[in-house]
Length: 135
Image 1 (spheres, rainbow, N blue to C red):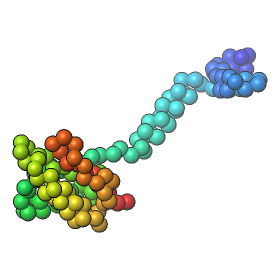
Image 2 (image 1 turned 90 degrees about the vertical axis):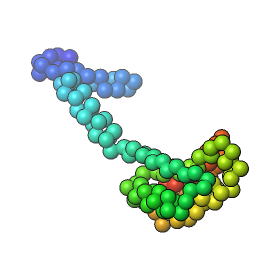
Image 3 (image 1 turned 60 degrees about the vertical axis):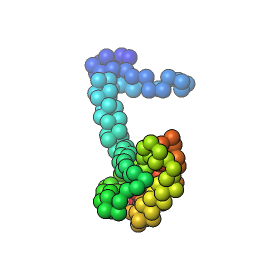
Image 4 (image 1 turned 180 degrees about the horizontal axis):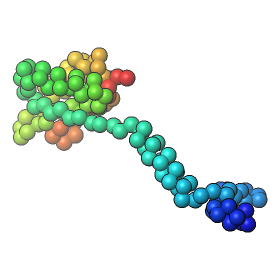
């Protein structure tokens, strides 16, 4: 403590559980600042997962399908995950097979850009499928 006060710095306890406890003479405010800076740098390097959604109907036309497929390709090339779903309105739930065929066709067409993470699954009035981009 005398050494720290002589240098006009702080005595910081690094490892309190050690025997004897480990302490270091340093400028505590500067230490906190650098630690925050380090944490911020690590946080910025962490990858953020972006999920893009594409919505289809069970009777989606070929032109609309191609248009949405182009968007899906773009999303996968950018590195975003894709959530493709078929939304069944009213009595259109009777076309479950059409919805599943549509999603499987999309998965097959986007095979070179991404891989299927979750096969088509019916949840209420939606049939959902996830596609992750290839590295």
